[in-house]
Image (cartoon, rainbow, N blue to C red; front, side):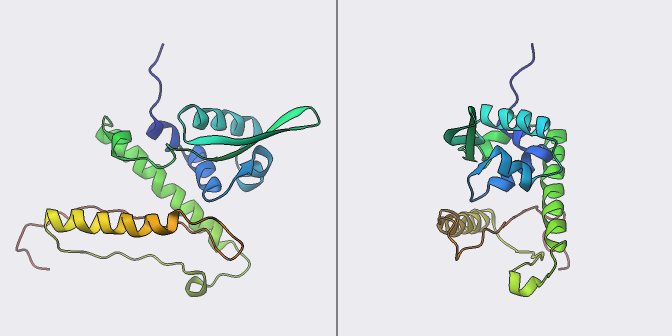
Length: 183
């Protein structure tokens, strides 16, 4: 019998990542999830939900009977955001696969945004850019900690009619440059 998959292996699957993103800042029933991710067949959706529940990436927040059948409402769980421990034993191949899934999910989200009847990147607060920072290891850790703290302040806001849920993705990669090389 195989080993139990890690939260990273479960969450960083294209369709399961789509489910996690659909639940970001929201609580949804299976029916509502099916409407948000129509590209996932219903039987497959149930299997993915079960896998996400199993690793704590999503949780059941309520349950009620609808025509004798239980209808569950789901929200993100404690393992929906993967920390360093989720990747501790991943191989370079695993990391590449996880990163590819992450980027593909971002591309999918951006594509869905562009399919809207009206697109206004400025008004919608959409942007993408790359910035190179020159920092020591200590400065880098401080920068990451400050960003994490700043984002956490807003991440914990409740979703209300006057708030828009937005994805803020960060990717940090050291450049392959020798110290003192031309900038």
